[in-house]
Length: 438
Image (cartoon, rainbow, N blue to C red; front, top):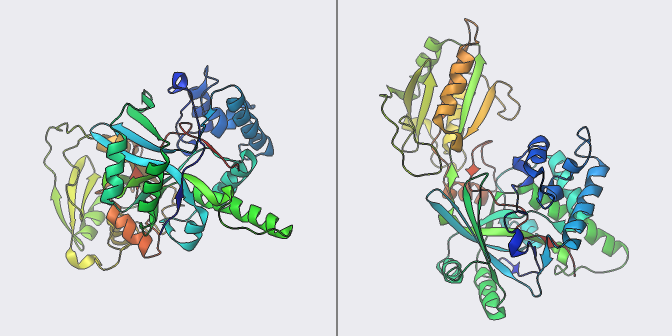
């Protein structure tokens, strides 16, 4: 049911496999990008964070930045930092971090499928970010970074991933800045590509994991170009290059979503009031302090991490607690209300702390699981040291969302609770670039 395509990608030569790739544009600030790319003119941040080549006071959303993005991408191709394939390819992309490995396909997905709802989203986009990516895609005429998608695991497609990655990879390197191994295998055999396309024909839907703004922006560019063609009397078939976007598609069973936790500070409440309130909806148990046992996973171990859903960790006044939510407080039939982060919001954050909108609340931090529970503890202790007598700080640890939960929400046409998903590893930019060309 979903349409995918091979394409003529642009990749670094083998000698630059570690010099060109960079973190995605949206996980690194302009200041961090300048430092990261310093002394390396081949770093892809020159392409997807082009403000680093302009004065530091340059507005990152100015026309000057978008023009620089085009200049830098053209220069990467002219200088041979990115080299065009000689025939259409699919790619197998493997990422390994700690004891976790995930393999997926780099391919083109259909904008029409997105518009029809066959490529499903789970969050809203922000207009400012959407406009930014729309401009840069249109001006560069390229997909400089892929959209991160998933499909419901299908044995035949999963088997292709394993079979095609048995030979030596075309790229194989460690990204030192994140401690991850990245491997890429190019697939150019027409019969194999046709077989993979045939298997995707029966995939009912794809799910956006990360890159909602990139996906919507690619759709915006397609609409603009379609309108221009029709304005001039032409027709659009859906097969035009602008009607496709570069993606990486993983089976859902290989993906890892990590905990995304909350720290509240300078809250005008008292500890005794909070503990009394919690008794209405939770069984509370103080966590016995013990040694953290390393488990070779991506996130740091901690004795107070919950080991199952419907259990939250809470750090308050130098102590950790487990909060077991009462069954009658959870609507298991609702795909959104049954997600632990939403339960925390509805049972504690809104009714007790008065938090109505997580995105706009000032006195709250969201901490990705890779920073560990010690980071939560440190933030609370730091704020406790500066608090007034009528204030408290508190951290809540949440059991990670599952891919099935995310897919159920997307299938229902609704959106995930804010700050619920923390995907790792992140997709590198600059491994494969796609120009929107005939």
